[in-house]
Image 1: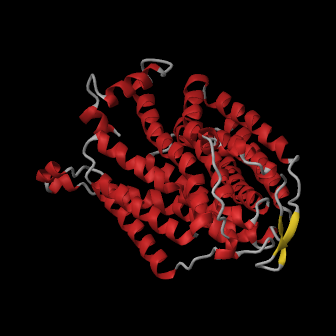
Image 2: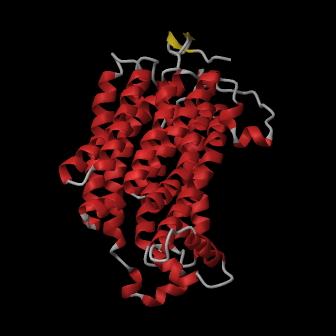
Image 3: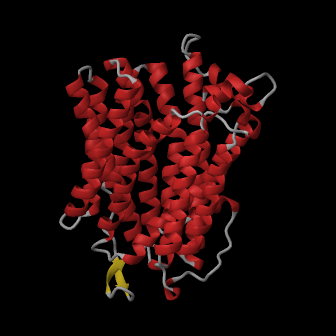
Amino acid sequence: MDFYISKGAGEGTLLGALLSFLRSLAPSEESADFLSTVLFGGTLASIYSLLQFIFAPIWGRLSDRIGRRPVLIGTLMGTIFGYGLWIFADAFAVLLLSRIITGITGGNLSVATASIADVTTTKTRTKGIALVGVAFGLGFILGPAIGGFSGKINLLAEHPEWAQYGINPFSVPAMVACALACCNLFWVFKRFRETLDPEHRNQTSEERSIFSRFFGIISIPNAQVRFTGCINFLYILSSSGMEFSVTFLAVERLGFTPAENGMMFFYMGVIMILAQGVFVRRLSAYIPEKFLVVIGLSCSLTAFFTLSQASELLFFGVGLTFLAMGAGLTSPCMTALASLYTTPEKQGEYLGIFRSTGSLARAFGPTIGALAYFYFGSHSAYVFGGCFLLIPFSMVFSLPRPKLHIDIKNQELAPEPLE
């Protein structure tokens, strides 16, 4: 962030105005520079999440009509283009355009999740969706490591003349991200078969108001998905804020270095993989998803109140374990519930709307968490986060068990939405 701040934060520029506003949010002049940099990074992440909030239902609804494969191919091509722009983003405006494009195409996760719903039965739905969580856990581990390693390579150090083409200190990480997206596109082309049969596609074209397009979770007729999405929004609003500030907490309480913070996220990623790849996949056959969500939220509550008091490494590690375990149990089971409440021809649209609630929460949660941390202190911020989490925790008990209808494709029981 410092590269773009130093390069384009002059008076009269968009970046300069943004930084001036962010500095005004700091509780003191001493923390203004650090907090404005943190919030600047959070603002870029918020733009990405807001675009996912808007476009995840759009991609999901489109995939319900034309199939999953063409939507995945199209959005991956857009992702490649967005990362390609980042390679040459020596100006903030180009970086912003890159984030906008990748945010729009990044809403395709709902399509990938819907494809899993297409090929799993109601009995194996949660196991299948947990695999997506395992992939996220691996990304949680490998992503920072790959980014940190590639970020050490600055092409301008050896070839300063390349700056005229837009090459910047972060061009190598952008190249790596672009290459990975190309590999993903190649795999979809070669190996991914269409999962949504024509007879299960939604051929109706519903007229939608601007309000319903942007706030689909409020306007959809499926009451169960709507209520589950609200729970998901409140949960991620709280958890994303605290997860964003946990690095500040580690530095404040234990004096962690950047390398030690990296190890902390590695540990959390391992726990998340175990939670989703082992516990969820095995326990979902015996314990209903609703009660797995209750267990997950209980772990998150324990984590918040533990971290609010932790001042020793062991105590801090216990809090991190519960934090990662809570995320690993809650997220896939909430997604599975939303899928189980949905009919086959609406999987893409409704899962897109459900996913968009998490994106909207991530657009504001980290900023709220950072401001609470710096204004009220670490102890109060984590206690407040835990108290707020009690709201979605209490709402989960009102979730009904999925009503069932006969799924002709799988010849087994599947959910029927509550109208």
